Image (tube, rainbow, N blue to C red; front, side):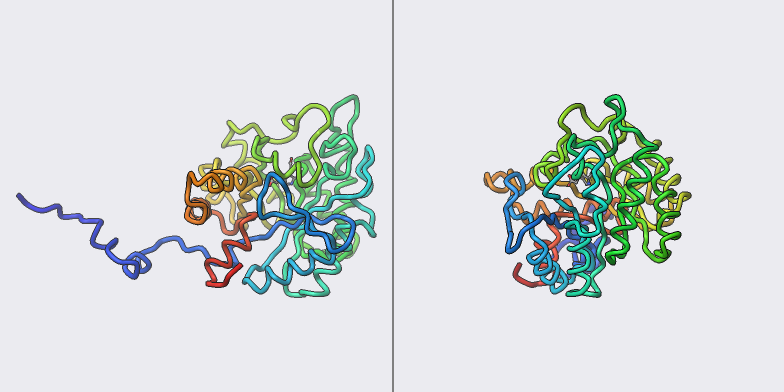
Length: 327
Ligand code: PBG
């Protein structure tokens, strides 16, 4: 009998052969490292639902930023946990709030590290929603100016990019206009253009203390069932002035990632979210999967599907592994 003419195994025989024909390769600068920052000093508070992830104070966030830089990571994404909250989320745009102070401190200590600031009201509102409530509903048009104000405060502190994650309509255009008017024409907008109302944000809300007191976010975040809507939103945000965009979550939306990558020509960042991280960590801790291999497989899949860069809580661990450094 004639042997099989196509033998895929010929190029799978050794690691050098496999490496030579590998189509997708992860590198340390693929990753954006999320940092949670709160008041205090010397803080490194473990997030219970995310083993290996910590809440920092400004000083320890700077140390963590230095460590990330040394591992070959190019960017951090900063989230704030304020000491007080109110119905409008005003601690969000306080120039002396924890996020502006963290931005200033990180930029001073590690100037070439790209600092991206998440812009949303949910960490700052006492009800935990991403905008201002009017008759129990998040009011889009009252929220947008507050987001723009927050974005300007972060740009003034030195952020290289602001990343609106609130899902209000029109916020990209409003933020662009506000940044330009305030003299921050070079601050980029990394829009969470395609963000689904996902069950996988649970551990993040533990870390950021931002679980809504009542209701959920389905009135403003996207329905997980919709792909075409994602493409429309990606195009809309680019038209409004987004310089780069986020698709989120990542591993359960690889189809969306691929299609969005094809539909727009700006950089597309995938956000491998807290629940995706927690799931892998829980299975690995139980000995049910090999955590390191699963991590690399998932991150590779996200890049293969079309992500230019990946926000992930695995950033330091993956960068250390890929760079041959001990984390
Ligand atoms: C703020 C925000 C959230 C995440 C990023 N920015 C939470 C949410 O929308 O509920 C989720 C990140 C994660 O789960 O890792 N709106």
